[in-house]
Amino acid sequence: MKKHHTITTESGRYYLTDQIREVVNFRLTPQSRGINPPPVQQPVPPGSRIIKLPNLETWSIPPCDLQTAIASRESHRRFTAESLSLDELAFLLWSTQGVREVVHEAAVLRTVPSAGCRHPFETYLAVLRVESLEKGIYRYLPLDHSLVYVKAVENLSAHLTAATHGQSFAGQAAVTFIWTAIPDRTEWRYAEASYKVIALDAGHVCQNLYLACEAIGAGTCAIAAYNQTLADELLGVDGDEEFAVYIAPVGKID
Ligand SMILES: Cc1cc2nc3c(=O)[nH]c(=O)nc-3n(C[C@H](O)[C@H](O)[C@H](O)COP(=O)(O)O)c2cc1C
Image (cartoon, rainbow, N blue to C red; front, top):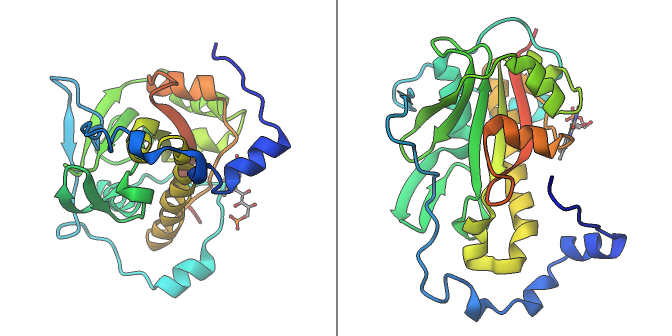
């Protein structure tokens, strides 16, 4: 069990401001000390099963008017029993964390913005109904636009519901996105000034998921109320160097 930290109103509000920047010594950050940046994507264990995803040139996703998508975006907590196609899943992954351009090892541009181009997230998927994918936990590899199969989980739906404090729609989705943060990536450049921007970065990712869902007759709902220990255990992350920060179940809607 991890130690509990107390956040007061004062410390919480301080965190939302940018006053921290005035006290951080940026000459001492790992970047300023010439240390290599952490990898932009977590390594893949040898022998893993990799699933190459369809891309912008090959998938069949209907065009979607941006104004209509913005106007109709809303949170959905009821899904049909329909599956997502692999094209649709690939489109959602690209929309949320897809790579646009690899400038160099410390600058990989994506479809969402990120403070200092640090992109501190990994995307895990709890797959329940996606055509051609067996149920289980997967992780997106943005640099390869592929999935790595992480593991099978018995009673995955029940685990998702438990990990979200009984929000059963997380276990009724076709696929539930669970984003983890790797704070080291942002700390490499911003040290203690990282935490607010990591939280800001997560918002862009989830909003793109909401909008991309509009293009494929699907819906999602951001979840920030979850059980940290259960969510981290479900993914098999250590809860310290990497931990769940945001969850979004996705399914087809009527
Ligand atoms: C950061 C964040 C956390 C949220 N957490 C939850 C949640 O845990 N459970 C839930 O049902 N909805 C959650 N929501 C969805 C909000 O309740 C929803 O966005 C709000 O009621 C407005 O509805 P709309 O998204 O349809 O416009 C969250 C939304 C955000 C942005």
